[in-house]
Length: 206
Image (cartoon, rainbow, N blue to C red; front, side):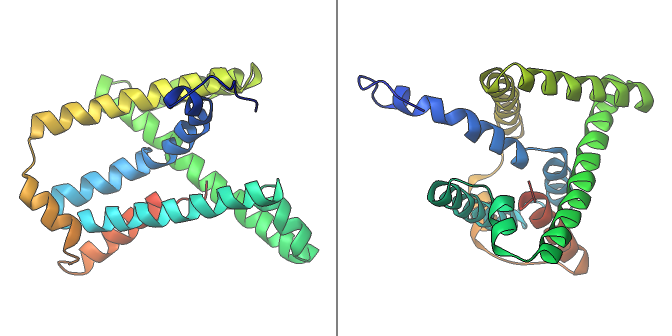
């Protein structure tokens, strides 16, 4: 990608933000919402430190993946194909396919449930609408990467605005937020299992 020399500040960085917004979708998906809302409903601010830790781990993995791409000009599967014997790469491929199907299924069901809860649409029609939306996004990708980036960025913007409104409406207590972020603790086995769910929903294979 070539940038004009007279661009400065955010204008110079803007062409690179599209992929960042697409990657951000992985952290505001139905799995994250479900586990984080469940954690807040059951344990209040107590598991905020798990969310912080999980996001730091995800940032580390994203950084390592980006460095791999910059250094080699290849993605992780391509490097695995070159470095590992064929049986290992086949095993990694099967694992990746299973994980991708499980991940997509969770997103699909989550979107259908959201339409049902928000608008009262029955689950089957909601599933069909979700499928139409998925194919619409694929069609955008066929038209070029920039239209896809614009659509995903708009959706992320809606989520950010919704979250900001919820924060304003709920008015959480700042001191309890800080305590929850920096005081690791659990409250029984159920909280440990929920923390594992939060970690798994954040550090996702995609």
